[in-house]
Amino acid sequence: MIIKGAKVFDTEEGFKAGDIQYVDGVITAVEEKIETGEEVIDATGLLAIPGLTDIHFHGCVGYDFCDGTTEAIAHMAAYELANGVTTICPASMTFSEEQLAAIFACAANYRKSDAAAKGAALVGINMEGPFISYEKKGAQNPTYIHKPDANMFLRLQEKAEGLIKLLDIAPEVDGAMECIEKVADKVRVSVAHTTADYEIAMKAFMNGAREVTHLYNAMLPFSHRAPGVIGAALDREDVTVELITDGIHCHPSTVRATFKMFGDRRIIMISDSMMATGMKDGQYSLGGQAVTVVGHTATLTEGGNIAGSATNLMDCIRVAVQKMGIPLESAVRCATINPAKAIGIDKQYGSLEAGKAADIVLLDENLNIHTIIKAGKVVTA
Image (tube, rainbow, N blue to C red; front, side, top):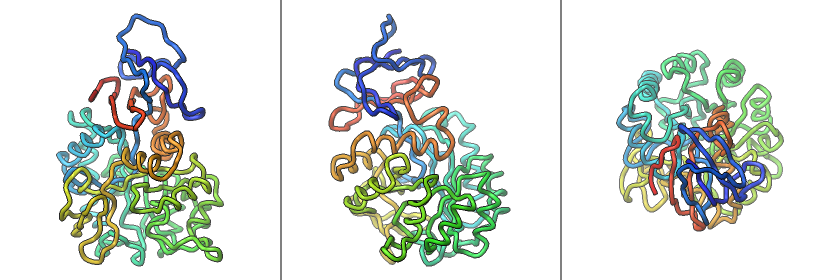
């Protein structure tokens, strides 16, 4: 199969005219022009981008990853794929070890089921809780907050059969630095839900942490005398930062400033979506806590803290580009190759290159989805 006539996204050069050839679900060539008698998809006037990778979202269409059922994951994977997100790394909430063990075991079992081949590919788990700060818990359930424990993580990783790709830790909490040192070579550690200052955050990065969870949210603000986690991350070229561009979590000016500070090679766009995404306004839940959703704003019914987003990652790209002035090339890079590299799946996913999965999304000039191709098969057109 050949996709002809599109403007194809190249991770280094941006969009350029070209054709994409793929066989048995794998890209075999991306060239300016491919002459062949094979079946052709005419993509004249369309943009071809890699399928998106969301490494931090909790749920959608009425389901949550922490429901702990294969049915929930299957419905979430189907919705994400229908919205151009072809690889997913859903996030857990703050629960007890026993509850997390069951949730992670379910995910491992789902990966081996027939259902796993039908939606977005489950490529990992983001363990967002429970190693967080009480003071910056956000929408996490304080009942189950637990001091960072490397052995607990390893037990949960065993239940997950190695699926945990991201582990969130508040580095100022008792035992955190020791935990980071012990697990940093086994999982990508992200600084999260934290009151850490610049010095503590920098020590966490020196000890092996390499990411910051939903930058600006659930952490101390960046200021001229106290740069905090944000300033420490900026000073470390080997640290990436997650950014929610739903138009709710971060002001457009802040998003533009972040791209100027960090550049589009170090930002990972995430949705942080919860179960109300793709649903009507109303009452939902996140981590066992009641959430009220109005439009794209989700807040804890009691307390009013922002409780994730009600926006999928493709819509986050549209908001960033069409309402915040972020270049399309930058937004696509931050939602494809950057997250794929962060969780170590970039040899197979994240860009349109020979040898990688034929996960391709064709968009029109207004960023509406025209066609989705997953593992070489057309999902919608």
